[in-house]
Length: 172
Image (cartoon, one colour):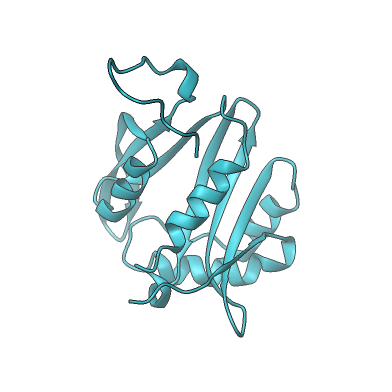
């Protein structure tokens, strides 16, 4: 598929309904239940703690995806990243994640939870330097199914041990 020229914008409280709808579409087959409009409104009402970005597709500025994080100072939790099914595999999740990570100083630790069966998400996070920290067995439960949550962490570059002979990596 040809990559769209998605425009990245900051999330606002009035995005809550569209975020809930997109979340439900994007996670329809997953065991993690979608978040409600009220949940998104509650989080987005605290813009210094909960920060996010959306990707919109021109020319109608259709919501194509979003990233929502919780800013905890030296640690940032990636709460949710979602892309509408019709816009998946076009690089939007990569752009959102790169943009989100780039909005924080390099000494921040990022972490998140992802279902162990979500191979595309695991590949995406791995490509940004996230590594497995531990697992939470039977963490996701829905429709009689249980899934293990994999907790991933991306530590600041300055505390990672250097690899002998390797060139210094650029901070994303």
